Amino acid sequence: MTHDQVAAVVLAAGKGTRMKSALPKVLHPLANRPMILHLLETVRGIGVERAVVVVSPDGGQVADAVAPAATAIQHEALGTGHAVSAAREALADFEGDVLVLYGDTPLISAETLTAMLAKRQSPARPAVVVLGMRPVAANEYGRLVTAADGSLEAIVEWRDATPAQRALPLCNSGVMAIDGKALFGLLDRVGNANAKGEYYLTDIVAIARADGLSCAVVEGDEAELLGVNSRIDLAAAEAVLQNRLREQAMRDGATLTAPETVFFSADTRLGKDVTVGPNVVFGPRVVVEDGAEIRAFSHLEGAKVASGAVIGPFARLRPGADIGQDAHIGNFVEVKKATVEQGAKINHLTYIGDARIGAGANIGAGTITCNYDGFEKHFTDVGAGAFIGSNSSLVAPVKIGDGAIVGAGSTVTHDVPADGLTVVRGDEKTVEGGGRRFRARRQLATGQGARRRTGSEG
Image 1: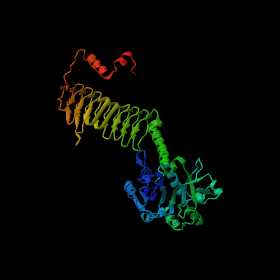
Image 2: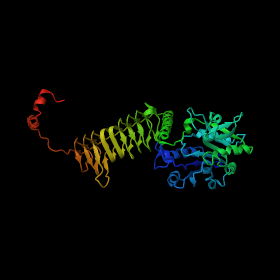
Image 3: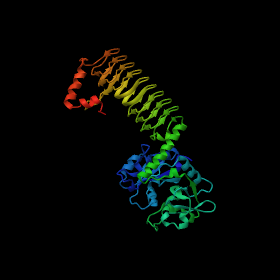
Image 4: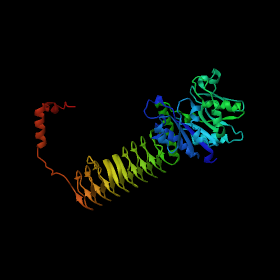
């Protein structure tokens, strides 16, 4: 089936009042990507190039997010059948198969959609294929009424169902694959004589059967058909998606030592033989190349980690961090908008921002690049093989030459030449007996001498 034979209509006009949010429901993120974009990516992945997203009159924010997908406006909230009808003009010249999907049901798989389209193209040529599911828990989904041969006879909404129909195990997910040549003719005959006074898309099944057309069911997994209507649902969907991403990472050759504690973004990319420790969080736009190690409790966002590099534990890579091959970024080190070249080591308690750290350089504990003067950011350049002693401050803009040494505790404000040695410290002074005299004065002033001598101070 080629892409020009399938269109998708994605319903996204709901207000999502149960989310209690100023953000439209379908734009709430899963794995740091708006949920509706997960769905559209799946649709594109099966070769559907024509997609129409149905939005409300004030749905400009959604329309902007889904661009370049086309949008259609549902001017009144009169039900799912009415919502699909809003796409009539956008599909006026289309006669292929039409998938009807929901922007708040983002976890549906490409395999399930492909199975629905295959059923539509099967010898029986059903006019409507409905995606069904068998939920484990009690629910108020619409029920699918099937014939003895397994074909679909009707969909009955929960509010309109009889007790016998409510007892049926096969439930309606709302997702359909419909013959595009028949779609709008069926919709034109849908009425609103029901408990909610709405135009139900589900009624097209009974109408198609009355016309002598067949309808069919494809069953999907309940987890992929989870609809997000509340923050609780959003958390449940996040859990499902994170499990998928963890499993995919491991199938692709990464080791996750405690998978349930690792959180991915939708676009995280891990190479083969990457090892990820417990409680690691990947924000958007992270690439980790083959053989790198991300140790426990590290947080990465907008960063690239080259092969053989070691990150963490307790490291933070912020946007623009580019960590070279075999480099080490250690505990409580933060890197932002900086390149750390091959083999460089930044192992402890350090901030590197707006900088280049040359190949093989060593940055001592407590070092900071002072990159911001209150008005602008400035660049620090540390050359290959340079050594920066512990607790140093490099006040940008500043350049430390190849092979240069900066003594511990220095505040460097001027460039250091290649192979130079810079030490910036006050003179050290020792006063013999000064510590004893200081303590005596303080004990007398505070009345603490007796307690300290008896060891009663905790």
